[in-house]
Image (tube, rainbow, N blue to C red; front, top):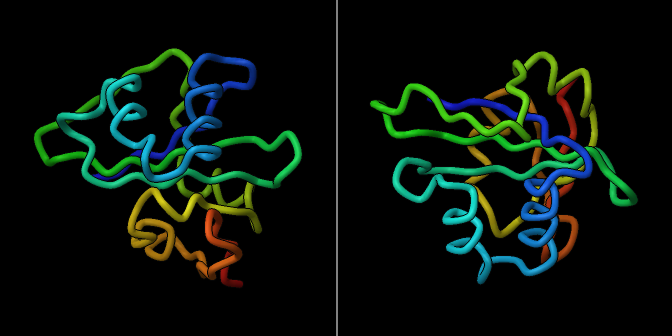
Length: 122
């Protein structure tokens, strides 16, 4: 089961996500701990709708018995809302397997060593 979240601008979660984007793979354990997801998140996608002052989104895949994750700085959205918000954008290459993005209709291509370019398949 996965859930999609929009990250609130200016929040502490946005700062944590930006740090993951900037520091890459080595920051994942700290990210999971600070977000409180270390015990039940089994896949994670970090998505932005651009590079300069982007809106950030998270897709989290949970273990089957985890029914809800709450964080006041995250707003749960549907896959359709994500597609409407991000027809083209970027995902962090060090986080996630890209399977969730592909399963909801995105092509994922390597952009550079830190980012993948994502584009909604028409």
